[in-house]
Length: 370
Image (cartoon, one colour):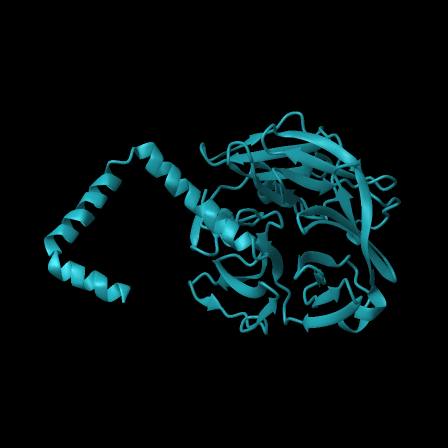
């Protein structure tokens, strides 16, 4: 009835309706530029808040590799056509085009942006938004160029961190590397990329502790986090992306890490977590900021996953907690199984054993760009 009334009114007073619409358009055009800019800036924030309110999604990041002639090297994966639902969250594959097979994906994504990089190829160093397909490249860092030209054999590949200065809104890729592997005198070397100048710059002072080169840094609430490689008393190291300073926030809840592949650091349900594998179990702890203590979240029975993973060389990778109590985990070898541990029933459910293992990241869709 209302639509009919509106149409009748437009028929009766066509010129009045047009004048009203024209007046509204003119009023919008008279808005100050800073107000319009503020409205546009708030749109990505509002859109991301809507998606975050329903729980995160999981992206299985798969790289489409192209040969020198520009032809796609087809990688068939049984994950490609599948989509998993966990309450309000979903897990699905996203394909990222690249011309380099050795592409890595930052585990420290934020604001719906993914950061991809290659140690040897500058065209692969890119920040992208999978939702909008926006992307922006950045050059190789100094430490990457050092690796490229001197070809240090046996040196662990540096892991890139990516996060946001919460006070300025600036996004920053960060490399923190152990200097001894490159014949340098200082303990560690830290480089931060500045998108405004398109240049990498060194940070001083840098971390007084070397980091575990086999774990990826993670991002949470304005800081990046690493595990140190101290065998007797491993520590959790933070880097404030605003002040660009390092701090040791606490000791890890485990000691005597003789195998650097047996530990990992992750973010679960917006909490900083660490994990250590010691057959036949792998324990996960979450950090309580209020009193600076660790609480054991769960213990994974590796005998329950033996038929999928065997006795894994690496610790399992905790990806996310979905639907409040379903812990998504992934093996870290080439064909690592992806499965769910139900924290309420302590039951294990295999999702898939992919033909090759993608990089799985927790993701909230947004309209952000750098």
